[in-house]
Length: 283
Image 1 (cartoon, rainbow, N blue to C red):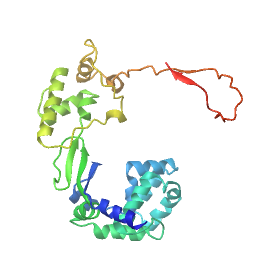
Image 2 (cartoon, helix red, strand yellow; image 1 turned 60 degrees about the vertical axis):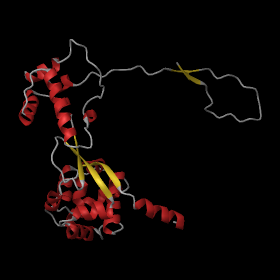
Image 3 (cartoon, rainbow, N blue to C red; image 1 turned 90 degrees about the vertical axis):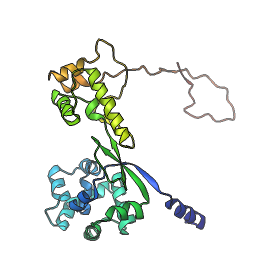
Image 4 (cartoon, one colour; image 1 turned 180 degrees about the horizontal axis):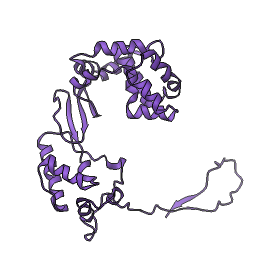
């Protein structure tokens, strides 16, 4: 890296940043967990890579959770590591090892040393050291189902409305009534509860309000017909609805058709014509 690039990189690293999406637990809970390096691969995303590589659930249980000696767990993990080590999720873990622990790679020779260094650093002040001193993160936005208190020195909450927008059973409605001390007997009352919850969350200074239901259903937000309005909620409250009945109907929009025009005969010329030079138009 030349001098100018080095100077730019160093200057950019001095700029505080905001982590706009995280799922970090409170520091005392993180210190109690005290994970070794292989436990990091039990997260949903690197875990999915391992399953795609052919790792069985029994092997994941044995390799990624404490119990067996770390060397024995590595022997189970190693064949699959060869297949996933270049995925984005694995590289994120390797970069963390390199940047935070100054260890270049994860392999049979370093797995013990990495885990030992993680345990050495697992003490009060961990978040100050990692988030502020090393990563220069000013604040991290934490995703959560309901608004819970966070350490405002490091975090800002981002509650989800999923439990309000994805009602499946009468028990879901009753849980909201219990947790928020409200009574819901109609769709209008349910909507008013959502509005009040949003007002309360705003007053508590949250980073925003999130809907992540696209993992489970279509995100077609449209105004329903008046005769259908509230019918799903009434059936849910009566315990007479299946999950599939509460999903929004997908509004299917016709995509523009592509018409391939016949290729015109061209006069011979000295100009080359690309093989894909076929006229297309949308209508």
